[in-house]
Image 1 (cartoon, helix red, strand yellow):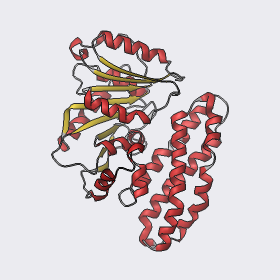
Image 2 (cartoon, rainbow, N blue to C red):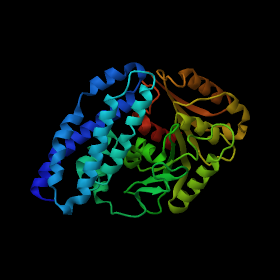
Image 3 (cartoon, rainbow, N blue to C red):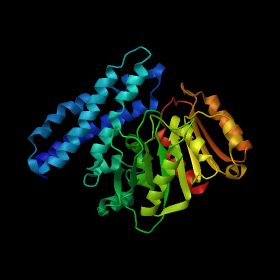
Image 4 (tube, helix red, strand yellow):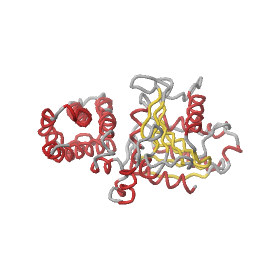
Length: 357
């Protein structure tokens, strides 16, 4: 890369990462009553990014790959802020905000292609407390490209249903079994986007990450269930290609995905060793139908926000009581400032729990 392009990178990458961080902040603290204050707290990091984006137009054809990645990531960030600022005050406003935030994982996916060669971007895709760990950064920098590592998509293009995305750490050593997290998106979501809710932590702590997409618009919470056999088939395909620790196979999920982690994960034949529902609905009858042998000692990590406007926190408290009474080993986290959003900062704690529970 030429000197002028390196100078352009130092001008473009920092505001891009700051703007991505602001979108993550909005995504984490999004709450109908606080939306205006949250947007005000973020300021206008997109303006700084927009002022530098024109530098990419002068890059030579030889740098088409990095140019496209940076431009695509930046365009999604700018669109996200544009749509967020246009969110109406009426009842549909929250839905519009969620739709605007779908640009965040698209920006991250575009940017990730540059992580292996650009240390600031590589650090961005790590758990924040570990971003200056020299051994980790060195291991990632020295990792050889492989068709068996990184991000792989299987029939999981945007708009499709029933496929899945996989992340295998670039530091993966063939033959060494790793823990696995299967992460279920929320209602109307998509696995390809939800992958990014967990990728930093999987990359930091050496975990295989699988993000499937529901067969229908959301998971089969009631009625006919085509999702459970699909999840089992996906897990079988992943285990046939990569060694997975048989004692550390986590089914996690957000909102409808968390509810389905209960519905599917409590089944007698479930292959998952641990469950971690977040912001999920729960009905005590689930434990009534569950096999007592399945429930006995089953590790379940429940996370819920006291500000959750969709599923009141009382549901999580009832789940803790009912599951504990049925014999499960329940870890419970109730977060005072969490609405109906994903608490990404707890992912590392959940992985430590997976390794010890």
